[in-house]
Length: 294
Image (cartoon, rainbow, N blue to C red; front, top):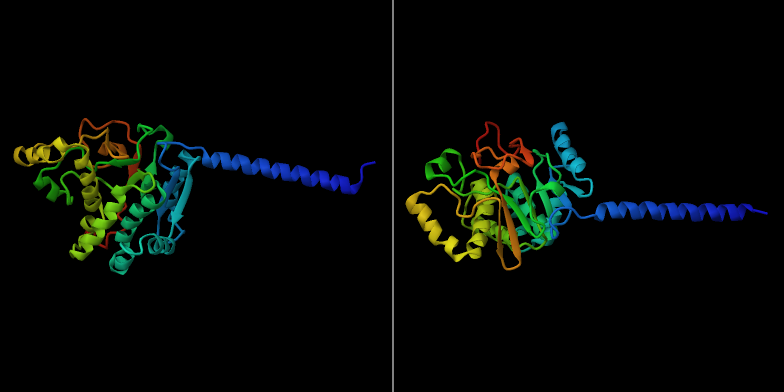
């Protein structure tokens, strides 16, 4: 005879088994790794609060739907502040009160990728191609992209308001945990703050990121580090010192440089890859009324 206690025990055992099965499947889905092996499958984004505009929400959804295997983290201002206070108490936290909101957002992307690794994208960036299909070697520890299709002349740099003639954008990037390039970017921000650099793009933005990256690239090849830079300054060569769609290695770091066209940059050239991976809408939510860049 089957008692009520037996039925109850059987039901509980069944439910426990179902719960274990569901948890295991969920865990497997979240831990299935895509993209380069050393870069965690986590997408980091940030905004003032967890309440997004319709456009921002639509853009975020492209990252989630195209990359269901990846964890997605949206950080608000309070969470970013706690991260900085905990992870950079000596370098960034002492200058935190002196940084504008957009500068804090710049700092966040470098710090969170250095601390946790993963992918970062601004909220005005749409993901068109799943990370799993990015044309990137599996052994890279960092993914970056140029912001122009070729080295700019000094007049062109000034015309486009770029801080560097060979500039890397910072609306999208990816990195393994503990990347020294990102740590160097944070150190440079601290140094520039002390030097009284005030222009955002140079203090925390693409200027600083480009400085840190070029320091690394110069160590990958003595021939490309200084002599080629001399030739570009004296002969005004428009080609990049370190061509895009290539892998650069130094120590245990491997950096893949994407062409500007891959990430939706505006200053493309004819030989940029046709297949773009992202769309960048240049919302410029950080600019004050009138669009003047601080």
